Image (cartoon, rainbow, N blue to C red; front, side, top):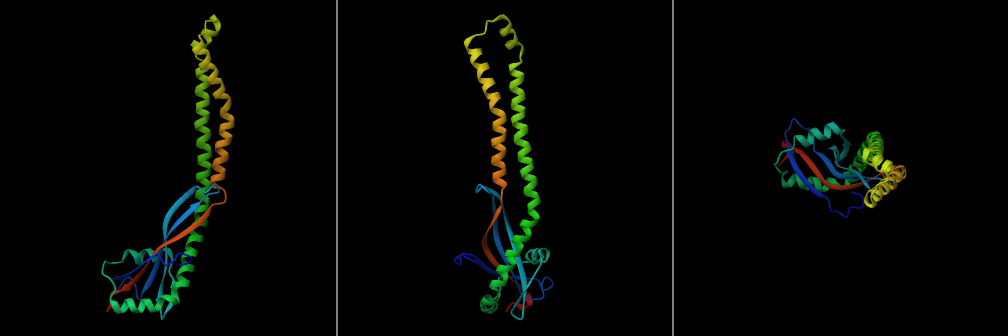
Length: 210
């Protein structure tokens, strides 16, 4: 499957006869979505598969693929079936790869809105956090002890340094909000998928097992 150097795992397991009327094959892959700053935005295992009829691959939809996997038993396929599968593999490998790529594209299309919502939430959250800090500093500077010390002109060196530091921090917050939000926008900019196939599962109806 693509440039994976044959490192994926292949297994063949039986399913009840009512679950499938022919042999099916499912590819499993790790989908990683990376943002504009190479930050990992999302990671998930996805699957894609199809049935094999007369040596030809016919793609299954997401529900059909999951139902077939749910029906899988621990019983391994027999040696003769495994030999048949080995002979079939060259004919179906490219089609299975195409099914996995299509599943990836469909997943990303549906996920686009979720990523936009996550970006908007993170933008709002960082602004709320830093705005709350800003308001807390303003309350601190407006505290009675500061006003009293100003009125009576008996401010100590330490309190003066504290007040100066708070004012400096207060002045930094608007630029900090802008910088943090710029980082978030860069993180979610132009998300790119990276697909890493993990394994291939052949599902064999029990009547085919011999």
